[in-house]
Image (cartoon, rainbow, N blue to C red; front, side, top):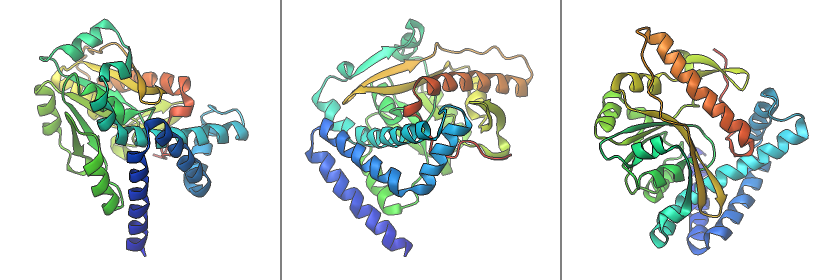
Length: 294
């Protein structure tokens, strides 16, 4: 039964990819909205998680507002997927610099344009995170961390289709610190999603008023390598047009108390993420289980 479901999902994805390849980006994004609305209706458990998270964090004042934002969140995720699939072809045909607006300090842009300087980019499941990595790779190679899909057929298909360029994906199950340190020594951008549950090994910090577990890796890598760190995210402003918003580069001065230093860095990144989510609540992935018991 599972194999049959996987095959049906694969066939559905092939049809979707055919439509995306044939249609201009604006039409593909409208199709993404339709698919997202359908998913919102059919995926009851994900809809319930999204609405519950919006209410529990008081981002939504009431149930109707929560349902509206949850639906928009589903649409944002679907659009991000389509943007990612379209980006290789689109950016080959257009000047990539015309597709992005920067809201970043001169200091950060200097780091991005310096081939002798790496960067740790902390981000969250907000906006167009896959396209952000693609656009940043025009400055310098980007290393990202990915989790395999449950469906092996769709995993292979998406892996072949995903934008590459100078964007290297490292499987989460095959992750080791040495590989990430090497990437930074090679002056690459290391992109890390900080809003993934870290279970008991993480540091508990309040995110939107609720305790959440943060992985220590991003803070430890900054302390070990002294590589500049920033928080950044990418928002779609029009079909295949984006704004990249980022903090100033962070260079944290270690105190000698490793646990306190790690917590301080994670708290700073958490505050940036919280501000971004409050600014663009409709563009956050509310349907993932960010808040879990200890």
